[in-house]
Image (cartoon, rainbow, N blue to C red; front, side, top):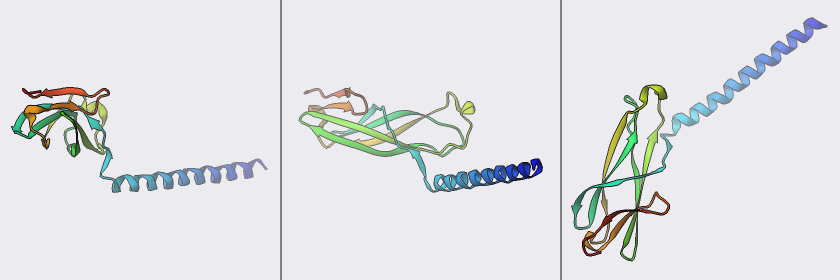
Length: 141
């Protein structure tokens, strides 16, 4: 009787292992189809004024050498009266590196952002912060 219990427990254990591998495999195939794991908003700063109605923004981002570089996915610009709120979203591709190797490695992303209003008469805010952080005050503001 004891022998049959061991055999049935062995089959049960093997079945559980195979079942869990199948579940993990299906999750991995979904991950392979997804290009980006996360697209969070990030803090930014003004690097330069690229015209009367556009600025160049930059964000410091963590990065692992050898991985696909993060990039700006979307920049939302919202105007309210003489205030412009900018929210920048960065796509962080799935990392293949170990976190311990990548400590302290960074990348600085740049993007031109058309504001839609004359920079001399508006204030620019980083919309990621709550409350939004003032980043630019035009001379006439």
